[in-house]
Length: 231
Image (cartoon, rainbow, N blue to C red; front, side, top):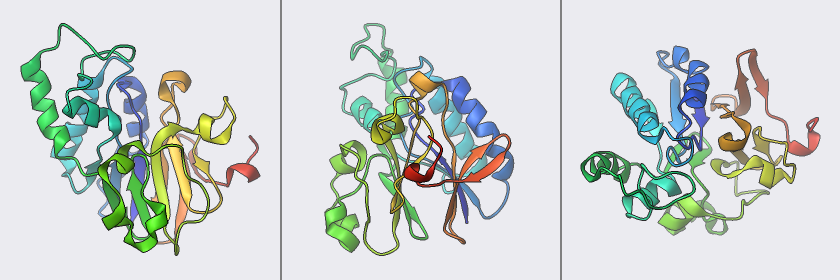
């Protein structure tokens, strides 16, 4: 199985459309899926349009082919803490259309919190790693979408974890780094902080070969551990 994934779109429609252009031509292949890791709203000003595009993709390819997970920003919208229409600096928007919000919230509230394929766990923020093989039973909803700080190092067995939520510039300690971060053990983080970088990284997971690639318009490149990269 080949799984393309991206995260933390934050209402940046043009950047999302560009990232999708690298992926969508391949979605007609039977062994290919797209996994979106959450945080589709709040920031770039086009949250509704980003949600519309994701729902359109699900109608076209099916929700089992285009898998959308919930992030903490969707959680906040569903809980009434931060309307979809509000901007990145404010939790309030007096012009919110409640009926319109409710239509999207109904969709967001049903999104799953994680997805697994092969030995890879896809999640917005993280899991309860101390539970090891019992992580599905021991991880609470808050951890799936809001785990902080990022956890690195070895997880149990040959599991790999792909997550967003925390910008890779923060995880790497390099403010200029917005690419995919691999810790050399079990974790791949893919939040490129699009509101600063203008880029939504695309990760390709080949579950048959257990290989992980950065996807660009020039082709795919194996993701190396951050400490072994040129950054």
